[in-house]
Image (cartoon, rainbow, N blue to C red; front, top):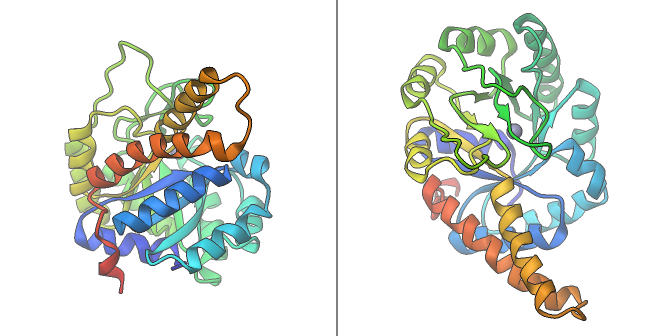
Length: 288
Ligand SMILES: [Zn+2]
């Protein structure tokens, strides 16, 4: 069923698991993930970044909403990394049920002011807002624009930020990078910092850029207070790596129905692994 980001995340916050937010900008990938989440009884979030939204266009949204309405599991449609108030407002008009405003590259006071304005707008129509404090590094040109270095979230600042803005969930910087990691780079999550931020804020926390972090760290983070994990690069790599193989095998292959199913299966293998790692499989029952 279609629901809001907040109603999905509050249950995860109370029960101690993380909901996957899959970045989607393609119909075959969307339908594949939706079927998988139905099968695994996992609540999930369709995340669409503004660049992805430019690619797929607003007419894609009614199809997502229709699929959500006939799904047995809770689904929300979320604007990932909204850049400014008007962009968030437009997404709400188009039917998004959850939004993020990311002003984390701005100074603290400016981040607060921008986020607060979005919170007032979204709350007035019953929707929740994810803010971001601290910066998550970016690794390659396909990672979301951001700082090259991680600025870790400071727990006391997180408390002030939540109080001053009224955000419903918070993306924190605890040691992840956007995009795929270059060979030789060893990402490490600061799980003690996560525990401190969780205890201090007591709201759903969000992890961006978790592609390629070690499984056990991600699993622990999902038990220690992260309630939404964004997955983008990992599923896209699985899908298109398989597509390269399929296309290479037969130079004349051309029908999407002959090409895409194997790609969806490869993507869903990765997605299913993430869902189990996050502990969101079989959690749909908690929402009834
Ligand atoms: Zn992100």
